[in-house]
Image (cartoon, rainbow over all chains, first blue to last red; front, top):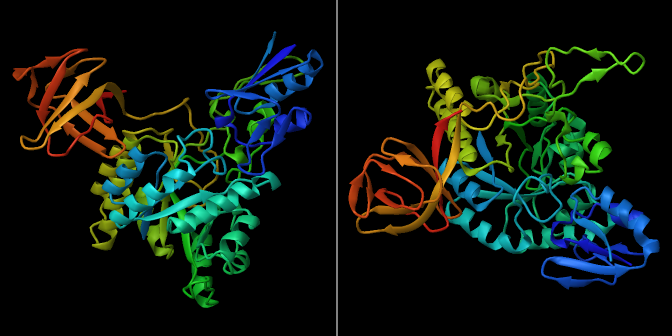
Length: 75
Length: 407
């Protein structure tokens, strides 16, 4: 399993993560920032637990994020 | 000529007002060109900013000038609606979707330098939308002057029915690419300058290596892409003659002391042009003062038509002075006119030049002459001590105290 941690407040809505994984990320039509699908919010962090098969795509998302607010962990 | 100053925070906003700006500009949320570097405001701040500006009779403009994607449209509309509701004077736009929506909703528009207005037919095109246009920063003064004359000759009027007014950048950082249209940052870090996320690759030093033999090219100045900062204070008379209406100061990522100093110098310079006391001595004084705050060395940009190639030869600022944090505000005793601060780092001595900045206080610069600790005269204060001294301006617990030292 993997844990995806996302600091949504700092998102600039550039679309990089959604291009990496449409399955896990989508852009809000409301405020233009990215949404981490199926995540829970803890303080300022949005956290999602996903299967190992999502590692590669989300690693790309984290690497491509221009403001570096996506972190990945193995759990 | 009006002076438009940058406000990346409440501190800078107050500093700009105190220094005599006619108008200020600021960004909210992620749709402005300083999304990364500035402590951006949110939509909720519009009300307060608007009321502060109205109280001080200063116009307020909101920058909404990044590239806009489909998923940004709702946010963009919300921002424009909030601009209207809170009576912000205009938005600074570069994307046509923004112009279209603002126009339909009766919000005034300024055309951003990101739209790269470089000819009179483009001015005519945008005149349907805007009364004020910021020219591309790469035009010379003679090109600028010709544009302003052509506006008069062709009676190009904006939506208000008045002739279109032209604004140009007067001071601050310049981009090595055509006004922000740069992909360096995107290539290296996937961070688009055109979404306000520039990581400023151009400001670093580089070595050029021949791939075939691995020989490194020796380049006199390693900062081959870092343009010096624009400074026009020594030829403001020539700028005035072009007939432009507004001087814009760059720097929403800059601190309150920078905004105060730069705005004040340009305020004095424009005033002296108006009363015909614009002299060489004054210019030298302003240039010295401008050099005390953050700068990469100065050049005159593209205005005088000289060959390009004024590159900075150092990383970061070449300011002659810098500020170091000393402590924070505690209380102001109104009746006595005494300010109390807590020293949190460094030391402070009588005779030290200090600055105080804060969201409501703005910017204060003075020299400490009679400092007191526990109501006794003291020559020096160290970390942990509370000091008091006479001050005409009110200070607040949200204020920060700095001392100025030579760089």
